[in-house]
Image 1 (cartoon, rainbow, N blue to C red):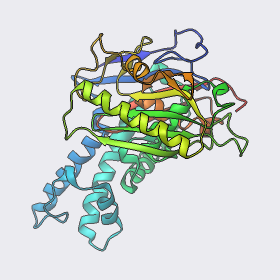
Image 2: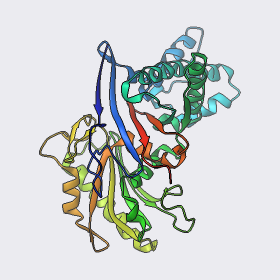
Image 3: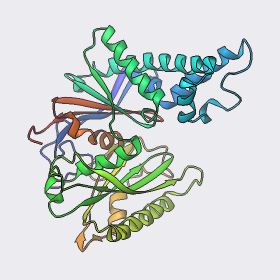
Image 4: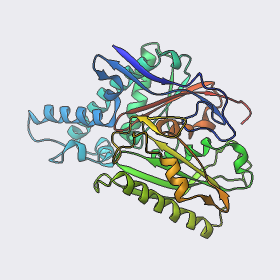
Length: 362
């Protein structure tokens, strides 16, 4: 049993615009992220990933097939959509519903166990609330698993609040990027560019800040007004081709801001998997991205700045951070009644980050 962890408590105060992977951001301190808790040679978080959910689903389908036909049909477990699973829970086929609910229960038990392990970590001490995000959260089965895990933790005497991330997980990964920017940046602008890079998709979008509601400081009303999605996994592009396509997506979004009459800030916030260094490279954890993104010679922020040196006549500023951190940052406005909180993102793996609020006047 062991633990490897990226702790960022020892970093000094943030610069005017935060460094890549910074500990101190405008609203929070990132106490830790990308924690890798091991049980023997296995990562504990892997038992609470979407891959684990599909594995459990397949096991229950095999049990059902012993007495007859598979109630879920012939479609492979990894291909059944979350929407279809949600319909099965509410449908008339009680056997199919039973298989899905059994999967939810077993997954919830695994999730509760993982959360218990995280709460024992030094950098997670005092965590009051955990937001659950990632692809599985964007479904009824995911929400049921979260609710059930919360009850299991309470029954074990663990006082922790679990809440699904408020925004759609795809949008949360973009909205959180607004919290990488200093608050003064929004004084004369309506929106920023945001990027969420994953092993399957690259998503870029325009995140708008609503000044009219008087809440631009806390970004409570931040929303994605336009977005571009590229599913790169099937195309298997090179690293350079992936960056080139991302540049095209950003240039298209910049052009659209003029049509939407938005004042775009000269800022791009980026979420990527893995450990992000202050210099803007990815130390490890990017193995699912196209090409070698962990090379010391590869620097995504620099490449984007060279391709897009200015936005609206001002020099482009870019901040890159871990994708779970960025998705978690979308919850900042809803975490002002606690001091220490965390995020877990249920995706291909289990992304994680722990935060402490820096200020109480949002």
